Amino acid sequence: MEIDLGNGIVGAILGVVFATLFQQWTQDVWFRIRRRSAGVVRSITYRRDQGAGPVAWSTFSLGPLHTTALIVEGDGDRAIAPDSVHVQVLEDEVRLPEDMAPWRAEIEAEESRAAASGERAPVWNGPRYAVESVEVSRTALDERPEVHLRLRPTDYFTFLAAQQLDRRFPDGSTPRSRYLDPADPLAAPAFLQCSFGANVAVVTADHLLVVTRRSDRVRTGSGVWNSSVNEGLSRHIDSAGRNAPDLHAVARRGMREELSLEPHEYTLELLAFALDVERRQWCAHFYARLKELTGDGLRERMSRGVADRWEHQQIAYVPFRTADVTRFLLDPERLHHWAPVAPSLFHLALVHVHGRASVERAEAQVVRRL
Image (cartoon, rainbow, N blue to C red; front, side, top):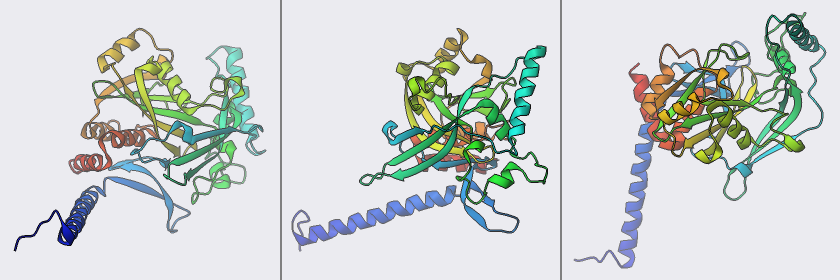
């Protein structure tokens, strides 16, 4: 008997059967890929105390590379639209509690002494922002992320004082033990979060990832390998006219000051928000693709002068393929010398360009061969 599949009920039934079988096959393939790569991108779980169970939050790690970077929003798959980020600046300036205020006074006195003696250049107490809160929600219809960032005014000396998270008070406690709850890393007073930065993964027109190594002359994070561009939020520069800062504009400022790149020379996408839970430093992760400038062209451009060239002591150009970037990250000479948030940035940039399944599969292969 001949059956016409183009007409009638039989054709409709067979179409549904074939569609169901194909969906099951694709799901099986996906889960096999996930199982093969499940041990590669892992987490470090934080515990309330010895013997307590793991908490829900975990930080980024890749094979033997463990970081303190917590990806709070974004998976690299889809960029976060600029109009989905809402920044509010609150009026009241951050004040340190009474038990930490003397630490800031010590820093101010030391810098005044250094300036008077001329033994070294004093540190400039620049105006900064502290992070009051970062709240994430979803739009009702398409479930796009909506990020609300609330900031308070602060300064660099307060930041340096607040970075002494493990300095002991007279009673033996520390700011970390007294003011932070390891079970809830997103809950922290603003005076301990006096830093927000834009980190950019820059890829040249000939597919090279730009990786920098911080100078030994910078005050924090000296000598570590870092993102292509790392720019801190400045209350003086990024809030001209008393407007709330624009995070994309901060990233573009970093591109200009650290790599001499102008906005028309690249595309820029916001991928994620992350928190270094160890140092309480927030950041936004960006991906930038140069339109025409190659690795050689960027080297030549920078040879003619860069505004903040002193911040970097070395720049590497790594083929922007998952295996090459992963091997660079996990190289024994660099494994323990990364800025906390840089590996997660590069991973998300790879996912954004090459897709999660492909990236995790390639990462798994590199890790297995270590």
